[in-house]
Image (cartoon, rainbow, N blue to C red; front, side, top):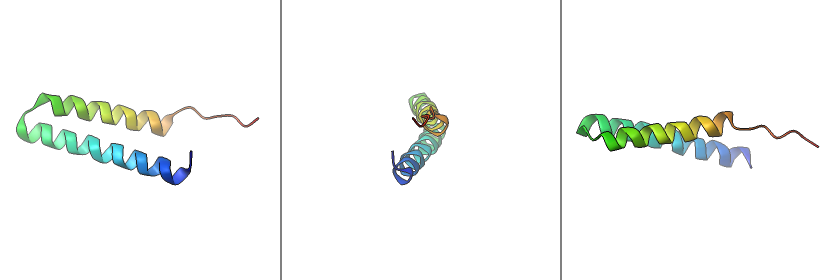
Length: 55
């Protein structure tokens, strides 16, 4: 995957996680906090993901 595309995806996931946390805390809706956890997990999985060894 192209590095720019990966960076953009990670940036969108980080923004979505922060937005979900903010909205969940301000409105008291626990669903958005859980959604923030999910987005954050996807962010860290994409950031630390598996490295492919060259053949």
